[in-house]
Figure 1: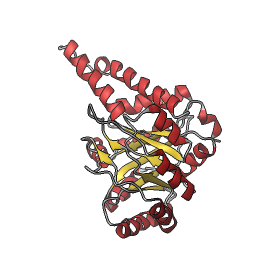
Figure 2: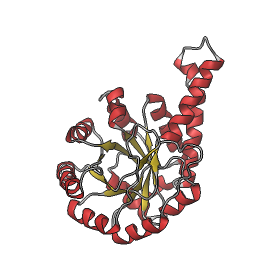
Figure 3: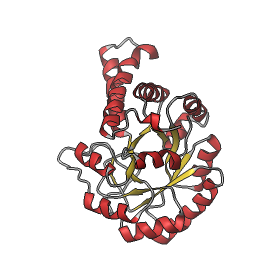
Figure 4: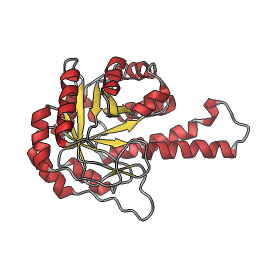
Length: 287
């Protein structure tokens, strides 16, 4: 079942669970995720970063759509961190059902102006829009982020949502993209999240969901977080296993021999995150 983000997360927020948004950068990752969410009867968000679609090619989205349309669980196809009008229009043309416009490093006024333009464009074709307010840190990920986290201001968040009419808002409450280096302790500002949530009537998005303490991520769902972005947690285990398989089997070259163990490792992460966010079995809530 193919959904847009607004309709998917409306159900999630009503029933106090969140939906993980998994970045996919290969067919094997797509196949493994879809097999696991079907088994667990979970809604899912499949998101593709502009760098990822640049590598995979536009035609890859037709494969993602085929999986979604033939699936018994709700699926959103989402543009992760689109930063330009080209990123957004390319995604809509390719068949995404949700887009993110990230103008968070622009001035507050410019962020509003750019986001309003995207909302008008996307809503005309029933595509949901996510925007970002504040800046999220970066631990070396290609997904963006900044050296310094600028926390989301609740007053600005309330005004921003009213002015832009977005469907979801990514907030900065202490997370960073990528895997956290040793010695760096991730810590979510739950009190700030509570304040932001009290001002908003739309789902909140948590970026940089990899590596944060489980108890904090789980608690965030109670205060409006409906979508948690996950990329590094999946890619790290997947490609580490691919690397190890090739080291252990120097003459191996057939994909059906190289990838199965990596696919198994990825599926374990998917199941773990679905448990964490209380998503397992929730596909039955969608009709």
